[in-house]
Image (cartoon, rainbow, N blue to C red; front, side):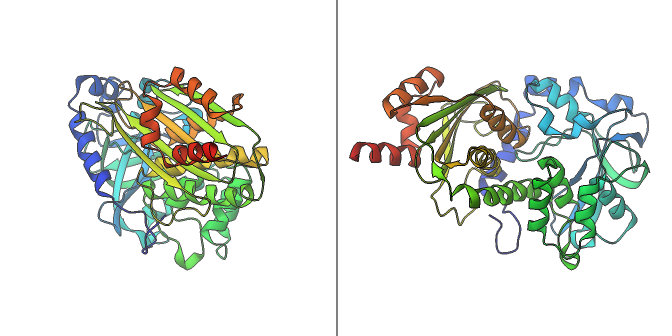
Length: 409
């Protein structure tokens, strides 16, 4: 949930994690992924020409004065996959990093309320409106440095430098996003829901919100990319849950599974009224657990009535909730949903919360395994997860509640 200022908070754990991510960049295995496919060698001066996926990035540091800019690869043709995480399931970590490290970010300082003022500001909006790859260029104040920016919420991107100027040579607006842009009387929430209902990809909706092209005219502003991602996941899942909470519960215990990027996912749906919890176990030398020698387990939970505070786990919580609400809405059911995630050592760097949303979605496209009782469920989970059931129970309010309710029954 956003705070009283309408923004998503900086939490101390996120700051600590950013420091840990920086330290992990010294790891040779980590560096191999980023610099093997780094495009810096193909940039001979301070100009970058290519087809933007289209993609943009709005920073959050210094808010409300932030860095805005395009993400442009020094290549032409169909580059849409570089900016579409919905297309990345089944891809290796190295492939995903190569997609994102190809994007060069130009950085222009602007106030978030200046979304309707300035030439560069207008072109950022044009990229967010674009339906297909847009031939673009950026003139940088210097040759970009070979570094990669990491964030646990948003996708990584490659070299960056201050932006002096940019141009868009060809661009065609997405008619659905353009219609929402032209309706200056529609709230941002209504715009998000309408675009989602029309089948616009979540990642495109997130960019539109970040670029300040949605909402009532006088209230439009740039939204840091990190916050726009969480805001869209949060808003759309709440929209789905309004309907889901009116449905009858599932009739049996259902389990959906996935293994991707050395993450193991076990998504369990129990019969009953909506409750939700994400429980993540991070092995040593993974993004959230770089210093400890033991496995660290974190969780965030909500009852039927929902949450009033921002989830302790952060954006992953809302991404997984959106995926869960989508399936329940499609099923015409409600359930108590607990998602168990083991992040194993092969997950050496953050690639963004799309990893959670899209891999939970992928799991839920499969055929579920059904169980008639909790004992059979736990026997199954013991064969799928390395961490003992007792440790999951210790860290999961929902599992404890369900187990206690079953015993009483």
